[in-house]
View 1: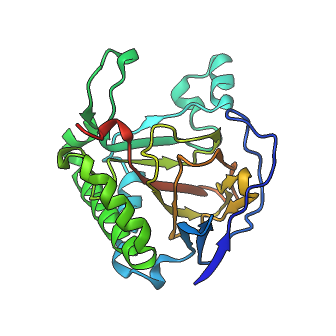
View 2 (view 1 turned 90 degrees about the horizontal axis):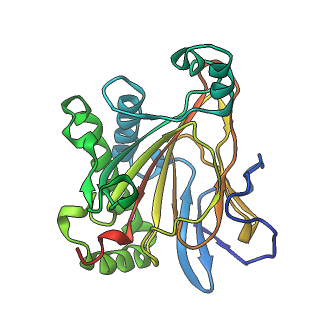
View 3 (view 1 turned 90 degrees about the vertical axis):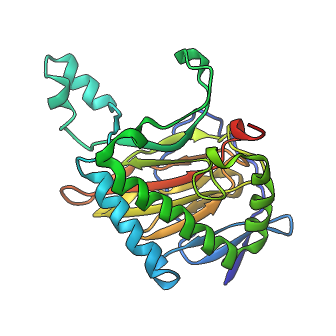
Length: 268
């Protein structure tokens, strides 16, 4: 597999800046190397590597887009503007692109929300979401197999780190949590809550849309997030953002299904 050497370059982008649209410049299968170490990889089409993971991802995506899974709705600026004109917010949300997300697995303490203790996502208590939860957990486990196969150093390092994470807080063997983001772009940020030294997995399902690429300005790298693609990347390491998602046809969308390791659960 091709190796792309990531070299840091100067830039003026800060946390909180808007991530503008950029064409992807990394869109083929590759290993990502930094300072002589493989820190991640990108697979453009999972079907070449795992039919099982491809099928599970399709199932998880279908369930997530249906009515069985509880979701947090994000109100886009245009939704707020329309609701301010007197339109009901439920109707305003139908204008433009729908955006929503769902968290699975472990949720860290949130004292500001009067919950100073860790817990498991409330979605796990929803019987209708059972198929989605099982599909996502299976996706996490199959992703781990691919990591072990393609980048064994990442697998072994993360496995070692997870010796400090109790099994009750794991989602799979190498992650604590999962989030599915439907049509959600993101300003530049760094995942400071993640375990340093560990990697995230981003699985993507999309149809009739462009954009929604992961941009890492430190390396002038913009990763294509093709349908059925997989990106393994240490999100704690660099500032990064997600470019705008632009439907090219009616009902076009981009859905990212992400597995990540939170440091709040080390030693619990």
